[in-house]
Length: 81
Image (cartoon, rainbow, N blue to C red; front, side, top):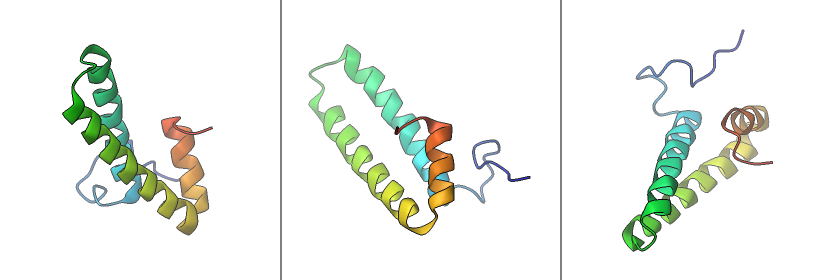
């Protein structure tokens, strides 16, 4: 049985690529809902773009190194088709 990195948030998992992508995804969703209310908050828009870029680079790394974990992560988070 494979443990999902999202079931338990132990301190040992916080450095893993999966946990980082998960936390970036949460931040992205939070900022997106914030920007729906505050359309002219350009500083938050820039922060969102930076987080999106970081997540994109992490996902590209994971896609190259561990394809199976990449596909599992995408299915769990529902971020790509």
